[in-house]
Length: 563
Image 1 (cartoon, rainbow, N blue to C red):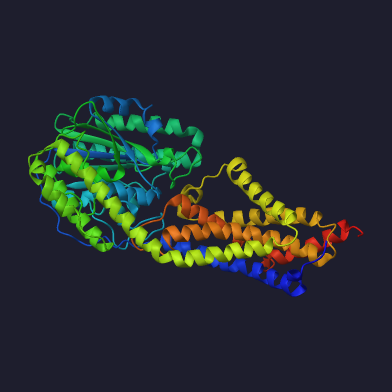
Image 2: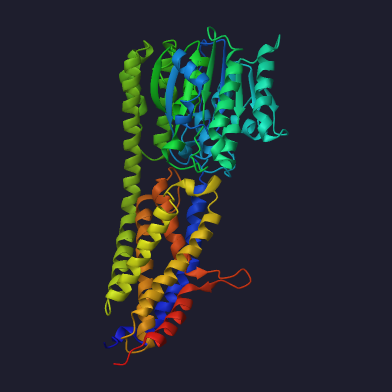
């Protein structure tokens, strides 16, 4: 077949240079995108006036945090099941990012990560949100924390603390329970709000998944020791997990094992036999309602009215806090305020303590907030649309140029690469399009591994195309065919990045992108980054297209056929 004019030596050289330049460019874009996500700064953390304290529903509240406890495992724990029968069984639902620090701040503050501003375990707490322990102190409660010093720093306030960091991991939980029992038995100065952090389950999930059930059983026994010291007629015990850890030891993503966790409560102020499903943002307001403390000012949900018996004033107090928050929130995103109008419509019924009115008002408030967020996103997408359409047309033009001669070879190579990559990712490696792909929110190791694998698959796909170039008229046509296959691979990945950009942009200033789309865009950029490959630590990074082009020319010299 003849060589078309488009693939002159100059055109092939231009394509080679363009593809080689994609590697470092994609790497920089990927770093910028992840940096924008990991260093997200919330615009919603202003200090607004807190509400007034109310009479408590319990003389003391003890909160046990079982880090990393999955919902299904919690239902096999006898002590927790006994508490469920005596009190409330709540299924808590999170949303990504569900790493340890973001999930902890969500249940402490009642705010989602886009409001409290923490997306990974490495995020600095420059402007922490209001939390329910801080609100408890404002209400005059004595707060004591027992656990690690780092988690104490996340609380936002505790007059007393006892740390167990110096002990062996296997001994920390037992010591934490011993210290908690000592605090509860003290003749004077007993804490009114006691928070106990148990980490054995999370540590076991990461280091020895086969022993996860044994760790849960040991934790269940320790909770029983604590429960026996609590007078559930006058006091309240709450056991919860801030997030689950999947069976493969991962967290952070949207898998059911990670984002569905237990909240079990029993005692004073808890309705016996109650069952509910609630967002993680409802935990802090619910505990604040039991304590009688002001609701955390950044909370985005009300308390779980189906499981707690609160005084009528709590309904209106919660509504006032949410109205203040959402009026400020809507103004911060440039949308009309809606919360105060809703409060006026339901104010009398809320002041009377009507549970049904509270549920309806919360549902309407949630719908209005979702519509405001969607309106802001629609406006932003409209401003990005002209650029996206222009770049989309450019990608179509590039694809048509790459397919203007011998179509079957480059197209088979491209489709073969994409299929092989998907099979390796989803079938062989069983990886998810989820933030759980990045341990503790650190993606660098994952990026490096998938760059190498993508480069290998591209090389194999290029070799397959080169083997089929035996009837090309010369080596230039053979190399051009292989480079065109690489170009089509780049167009496919760039299309994913462009779709993500249209939906979410490249700088996150008031909301967080859908985590599945974010991971897909990062992996697409990682495949483009593979065009600059590190063959050996002793050698500088080399442009993958040049290596593949050289190998293709060698293959062509072997498979070349006479006209």
